[in-house]
Amino acid sequence: MYRPNAAKRKLRAGEPVYGCWQGIGHSLITELLGLAGYDIVLLDHEHGPASVADAVPSLQALAGTPATGIIRMPWNDPVYAKRILDIGAEGVMVPQVNSKEEAQAAVAACRYPPAGIRGVAYGIARGADFGLAPDYQQTISDNLLILCQIETRQAVEAIPDIAAVDGVDGLFIGPWDLSGSLGKLGRFDDPEVRDTIRRAERAIQDSSKWLGSLPSLGRSPAEMVRDGCRIVIGPAEITLLRDAARADLAAFKEAVGKLSR
Image 1 (cartoon, helix red, strand yellow):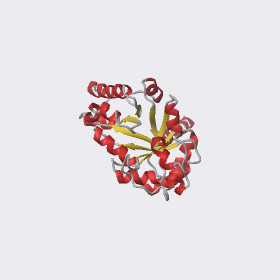
Image 2 (cartoon, rainbow, N blue to C red):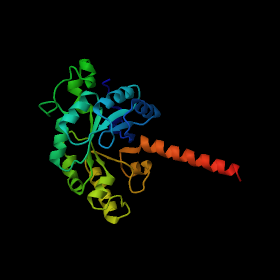
Image 3 (cartoon, rainbow, N blue to C red):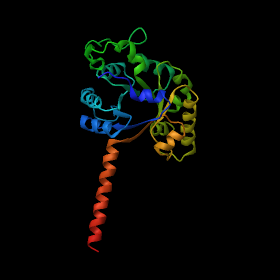
Image 4 (cartoon, one colour):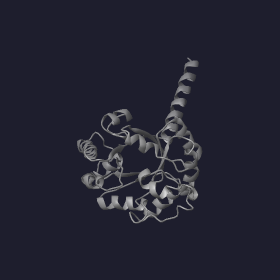
């Protein structure tokens, strides 16, 4: 169902938004996360096994919740962007955006001509309520949330140029890939890694675009907000389930152990 983008409204009102990654492509999980109260449920099509077809019931499930449904694309691909927008994604996250030109390509893939290259099928697309949303063509560019990921040394240097691209709403730092691009994968105590992440954060804050990230450098989601992050995508549903299962098993084993003492 085409509707105002709740996460974007909050951001424009100066409020931070908090989301959860979803890698398992089942709509019941999507619905649960949306009803739990996350501002964003981010369907991960870069690292998760879900397909465009899997995303349809997930987006349908979110329509009954306040959460905004964003899809992370596998790559900066105009064909993939067209397909997920036609099924009703309320935002897109584009990985590995390293230059102004790549950011411009990402935006163009999301906009109809003459502003972009998105193929026109809103008369039959679910994203436009199968042609029943009368203002879809006029409003979708403003309603959509477009996030470009900053994941390489090259991207960090290009932040001012990427942020200057019309249509890019936010720049989202990927700390793991960024550390890897420095040759120091996961070494977040390394001074170069810490300095590069901090420099990226400052550069985005100095622009007119929203800073996004997953929690990094040992900071909690709330501490990320304290440091200027407006879009925090925290846990993944897989880690929530994994950690809860391990904690439950550990508690059970500890309790049973006490019975035998």
